[in-house]
Length: 320
Image: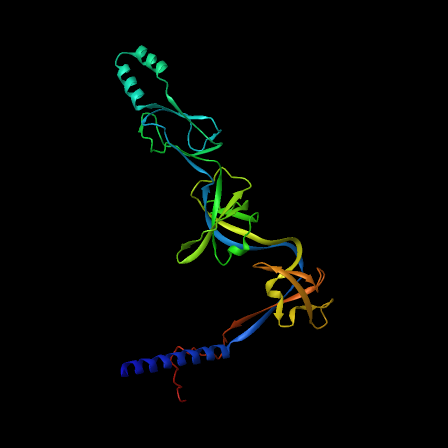
């Protein structure tokens, strides 16, 4: 018990010493004001909700053979566009493969005869889309449970949205998508589906949201990581000011104006504001593009002369 008391006393003394030191530092510091003049300007402004997601097929279709057998010919490759009804693969059933192997021992004529009599099985595409997995090779044996090809009708982006933001997301809402691998390219998208069932990821409740892209660039690949900005509200070519210029109080918002000529004393002027993003705020009334608005910033610096470092031991005077 005594040890705990001593520890508390030592901790309190340390906190007191740090606080006293900081007070000495800030008391000796000087605040230098920097004043800039800015005028309201026109710019697009938008409010966004950011999230992450993954590129996925909207409809991932696995092509399985109807019977056990062997792949004879593969007519498509990964990335190839296909139409519904296209033949993707020719395969032989186990019985046909055995008959052809036996016929090869009797010559090409016997093989051709059995090929005409015992036709191969075509695997056809049921959809228009793209081959996204196609590693099967001729000669490989397969079963009716194997995926010989995987098709996708189109690629989408599936975003993970925090439950605190899901109420701000609506079907048909616009969004901007960038990939980690191609961060300089922005792709426009639209919310297509908001899932009703939540998931828990790292102890956070999230909802999946599917986005359809206006165009799918050729570099898009299933499984790529994406960053999504949902646009909850936007306005084009509106009058804005930097956020730091507009002051807010209980009475409302206001800015400091320098009258024309620059010789009169600056004055406060009330403004009406609209939406804001991370940098700018919309100005609905109070100032125009011709007004000079003061942007005042303060920079604190330690005294250069006569100051002492509170963390260094004090020097004794020479006594002369």
